[in-house]
Length: 83
Image (cartoon, rainbow, N blue to C red; front, side, top):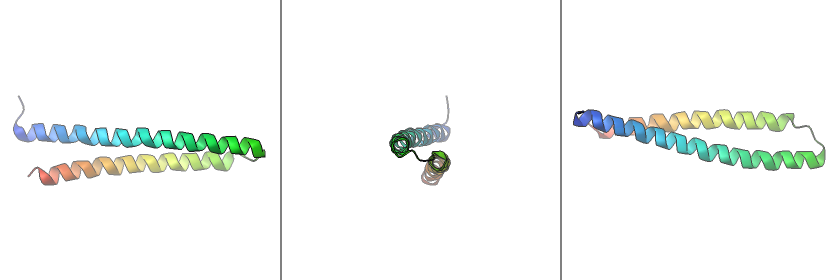
């Protein structure tokens, strides 16, 4: 139904989404584990949790930026090699 070139672009787009989604899932898991350990330590020390929360939010923003960069990089690589 689709031409060969369009089919390669669709596969490339799917691959980029898979890479970005995998990176997001792994990153969220790592951030969750580290945040849980950090909040447990803060609870034991009776310390303020606001800096930890700010760190988690910064990590999430960085993760989203990294996912976007990975998506664009896979798309650019696919476009450069499909010519």
